[in-house]
Amino acid sequence: MDIRLLVLDIDGTISGRSNDTSKTVKQAIQAAQERGIQVAIATGRMYCSAMRFHQCIGSQLPAIAYNGAWIQDPFTQKLHRHLPVSSTLVAQILDDLEQPESIDRLGIHFYIDDRLYVRQITEQTKFYAKRSGIEPIAVGDLRSLLDRHPTKVLALSSEVTLIQELLAHLQQRYARSELYLTQSTANFLEITHPDANKGSATRYLSEEILGLEAKNVMAIGDNFNDATMLQYAGVSVAMGDAPTKLKELVDWVAPSVEEDGVAVAIEQFLL
Figure (cartoon, helix red, strand yellow):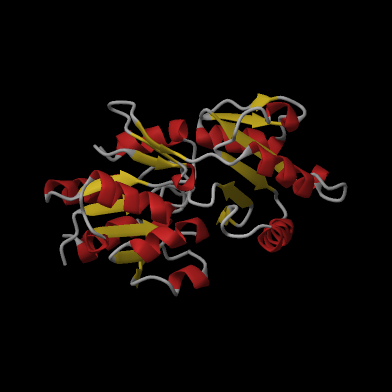
């Protein structure tokens, strides 16, 4: 086994309830880096929100944000890849999401130029913004922003069944070649460009930027938006509290994030 790149999800993987990375996990990551293994972040978060974790683990690589729609080098500020969703499709998606029976039960986030735009500031948005460390911008009608192409659209609700129903509806309505639809948590429905996913972004980072192969990559994640990345990597690890269907895709299942599962996985495969 010749692992030279370790790619880590943030939420539910290196960050749990505390919204921070434990000392144990940071020490394990550092130990891997001291053995010549490069470490990268791949997250559904905004790029600006991911930077705290990028710095925390001492990554020297471009960061993968927005589930792979955005890859940027924090040191040179070079934007290696940006794959936004067409505003025409986003207008149709708004029609699907803003139905009378669901509009008051659903939050909708637009991400444009690494900034978050919302219809209104709700308690759910406040919680999201606090955890992400960003300032949301309330614009009322999101259609006023459709002269630009969002990097990502996020639908969020405290009702898990509503998110599941919307995901099933959108999967029937849009072909995989039109949109990439996934869940990063049970409450978050993520919508991006069809080529924007963590798998394609990890492949781009490893092969196009670093000149590596899939067999040189180890990836760790905890939810369905990590599935393509885990399928690409030569060694794939799911966290202990990941959905069962995700665990079925991987080589190994680590303990949960609260049990420092990433540190255990690094010890198991890299140290």
